Length: 551
Ligand code: PEP
Ligand code: MG
Image 1 (cartoon, rainbow, N blue to C red):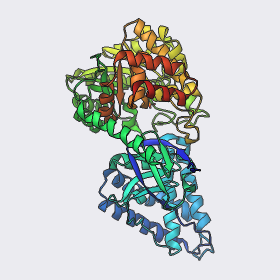
Image 2 (image 1 turned 180 degrees about the horizontal axis):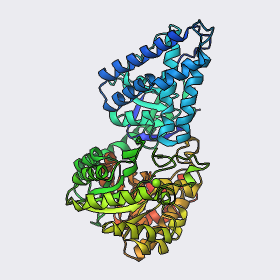
Image 3 (image 1 turned 90 degrees about the horizontal axis):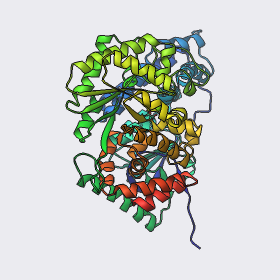
Image 4 (image 1 turned 135 degrees about the vertical axis):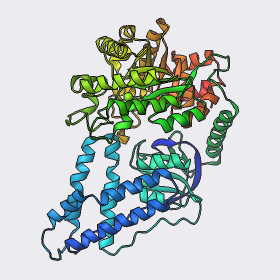
């Protein structure tokens, strides 16, 4: 009898297929007492900081360099030194300094965790510094990951220092149990262009040296893959890449139906990357990403410069700027000062007019002024619009600031179900399928334990998208998708079948989506949309779409 090996599933965060033996990265737990004086602890922290600085200067990858120097700065933060000093006040040797160090770091970790999202994922950085400091005091040398053959790196979580030390000739893919799409592992893997899967429960239970196939596109990790499985996945990956390379120009279906393909951007560098891959515009400019680390609000003139820098990268094209989507997974220090019980359902996005109205007024003023300075078509939309009243409020404010095309994001069930009323107030709509999926499925988009629920393939989500697209279609209004779903080639075709008119995605995904759409016609997209809407699960919907649309 042939043995069937398990397939584990996580979140695919960097596409590609890799096959190889597992190399597990485990960290030696220092369970014994670590005696030291306060001065020795400070010296250890200092030497960890120096070491991180040195690594940051030698590492080749930009993102890894940034994270390492940020970690070094944390290790040198006087507040941290003070917190440790307060716990070890006497000039004596303490029998075990571990609890004092862990406790001092715990305070900082709680503060980051309560901010959620991107910040919560930085907690791993603090753990890394604490672990290294304790290791240094116990005389345990940092062990770099030495690879002597092509390997699949498997870990609980990879720290920036781990990834900085990876030998790129041998690291074929990264798979970690923890982490989300914005975790360090995801960012580094995309930077390196190797497949990666995060939030992969159970992967640390696989044996060292066992052969696995990693599919960074759908997040599968297959133990001892059969030759047939390897062949199917490699063929699919190869076909997607080949098709991507063979098609250029504006987005079209095989029958010539135009589908505007744009890119998401958070800053001018992203917009330049978008222009390089032939994006037909920026479909989502996430302005809050410019301000995640700002303690104080940038002035109107500084904002004008920042927005202008993105508009200028897209002269002659369109940029859809989103007003600040601060709150929940993207807290901005100068706006979201108050901790909320339930931030995803709290004061975020356009709801900030209730608590920080002036900030949004100044942003609209800056956007209106920046738009007047460039030859770029600037459209502006507000996030988390839920009702027709909010849509009308936003539209009036944006138009008063001189903005010509105003729209709303549809990312809540109320906005999608009530789209026939909400959209009357505006010129265009953009479906934020990341949030729409989270709210339709009542499942936190950042919780990797719920990743099976937070799938846009779920028919309930797809039907909700269909309702909004129908409402827009009746009014002949453009309606785009700017969530992650637009980056999946088959799902992109389904979205077009549901009535969506444009797609916006990470620049790196654009060529593949363009290539895939050029292989299907409108009738097939419609057939796929109908089939997935009538499926009874996300898996069934996806399987039906692949059957109808091909791979
Ligand atoms: C979305 O929710 O789909 C979206 C595009 O916005 P963000 O991911 O920034 O919340
Ligand atoms: Mg959103």
